[in-house]
Length: 457
Image (tube, rainbow, N blue to C red; front, side, top):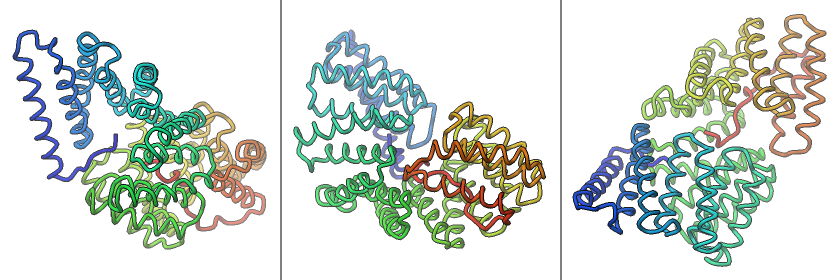
């Protein structure tokens, strides 16, 4: 679920809506045999939905378990009163999966999404709006889990069905096309993704309006694809346009506004406007600290982003405390094996080396490589870069034999892993730079620390 606007006025509206639905729910519960009333499933589900949305808006984890419990009860009552395959019963199942996904139970959510999709296809029809929604919900979860191949097949089918049943410019069809472009990008087909997204921006503007969220999201997605493809000037203009729209519709402090602002700051850094990048990331960090708190992964990511610019500006001593705080926070919040934790580990190690502490860096890099190999696999791009970075530190410490062996292995794995995949160009450049620097004993050039892909926040 999109985290709703966190502005005070919007929060009050969501709170009032939850209170109204709680009142309706309690009034119905006051009747004898209330659970057998035909409206009970819908009223209970609507109350649970209100708690779900309010919990996401407030970032209040305590509301989501109550929403999950109510949806589970509503689904059970719906099966008994309305029937197992009634549309309302299946809506409860779909929303229950969504809450579990937002609570971090990906496996539990996947099982429910798959069950709901199978039931909707069988009992509502393969081209029913609810069936198409289920296909998109499952595909979004698969994309988040890194299963782009399966998500792509599902979304190609969903777009074909939606175009046939709803038409190519229907809002639901446009939503499916947006997800299809995401899947194509995840598979590395940037050209196909970009072509879809360009047309999607045009169609969304005409169908939904220039300031509609669907149009702004399409613009933001296209900007991120341009950034991934190194079309920095297009990315800068598109992110700027998306930010203006998000500010108008969602407000200055909405998470989507802040994410687009962070990505724009990254573009500025890639364009060598390091002062602009520093100011942009610092502004986003200040807002995220206020709105989300210091332990939110987005806030921790902003700390790392700002630290990266400071390193590029030749200020590693100022960057180090931010990187240490980000790494400690990622360990606590996401765990030691999460990719963002490993990303933070690698950037702190490079800063420690720049500060003349290569032995401290070596310990971090050895841990990062071990975790990458175990969690991501030996040929994953992150693993290859972690190995090359460790090789460089061994050379710095005079352990040339160990460093050379690691570098040779990293180069072999890089050829195997990177191939011609356009999304991995930054990995290829990073590996080549490390190798050349080691072999020629070149001094490190000022560069942007190896960063997370855009849009992951």
